Image (cartoon, rainbow, N blue to C red; front, side):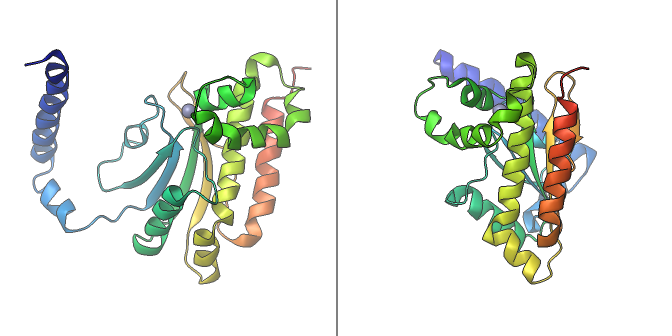
Length: 224
Ligand SMILES: [Zn+2]
């Protein structure tokens, strides 16, 4: 057995144990899931290994529909993210779309500091757009907190982008109940925080965005 195969064997062993424990705790768990998935939530988060969607909110398979990419970006031309959203909203009828950023995000940091990181620079260019939108305010934030400030601004902008997708706009137009949220996860304490950009209709988007932006700016205001 090669070293690399041996290393992966641990994962397969873990999986066997997890499946057995899950089935033991809740007999018939997997056969029920086989019938259908009925998640209530779509999680759009960062690909960072420290921000595993299901674990953070203690949900089992079947409860959370998940899309993750570097720096939790929602781009109007990204067919991958849009397809996940469309399937989640149109077919699974999720009731909540949660855009989740996290503190000290590597993608956001690279965008803030113009770091040369290769191909992915083209992707985090979208985060640089956020940085440029708010550059005057960001300049007032203490340097040590600027990455986290941009992480939160990025959540607001990506949540607003989610609201503006045809998927969400069409759902709202036909009266389907779906609410968009923006959260941030603290790597340092394991806690999720609601940034209050909560919109359940087209009319709510701008007021929610402004309210949430004020909250972020207050939070990162220089100490008096
Ligand atoms: Zn990240």
